[in-house]
Image (cartoon, rainbow, N blue to C red; front, side, top):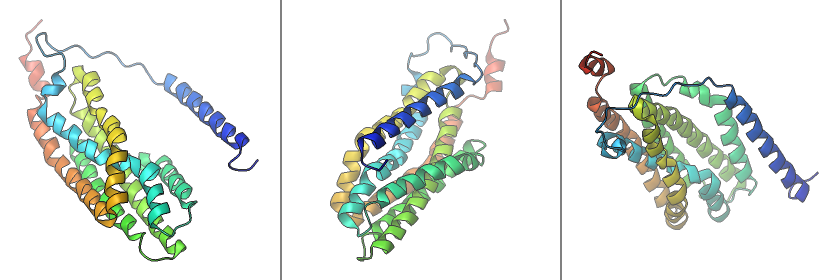
Length: 255
C-alpha cells in the first residue's frame, strides 16, 4: 500500500472509526456523577450571561484558542507560500504536535492544582505563543530548505508547549469558576470559545498572517501575550464575586 491511494485513505477512515469506538468504550467505564441541586427559584435561566467576570474569562480564552487554526491551516499556507521548507514538513509538524500532546499533556496538567496555578499556566502559555509566533516569522528568511524546516520545528515545539499549558489552565478555570448547580450552562458558554475560534480563526489568521506576513505574526503573538497576562486579574476578579460554599451553607435556613 502506498500513500495517496484510495486504499490508504480508506484505511485511515477505518482507523479513525475504530478510535471513536475505543473512546466510547473507555467513556462507559467512567463512574456516574450525581446531579447537582438546582439553584434557588427566581434566578435567571441563563445566569451566566449576567456573570461579567466569567464572560471576560471566556473572552480571553477565545483569544488564546485562536492558536487552533495555526497548524491545520495557517502554517501549511505559510510554509508553501512564504518559506523554502519542503512541503512534507506540514505532516511532520502535525505529527510532532499530536505526539507531544499524547505524551506530555497529563504531566503538564498535573502542575495545575487550583485557580492560581491555572492562571499562571495560561500566562505562560501566552508567553510561549508569542515566542512561537516570532520563530514562525523567522522561517521565511533565507533560501535554505533545511534551515527553514528546523525553524518551523522550533516554532511548533513552542506552540505545542503553549497549547498544553493553555489546555491545563483553561479547563481548571472554566470548571472552578462555574457554580456547582450551573455547570451545564456555564460550560456551554465557556465552550463557545472553541466554536468562535474555529469559525472566525481561519479568516482572521489567514488575513493577518498570509496577507501581512511578519508583522501579522508579531501582532498575533502580542495578542496571545496580552490575553494570557490578563487572565490572572480576570480570574481574581471572578473569585472575589463568588460566595464561598461555607457562607452559602450558613445562610441557608435550617430545614
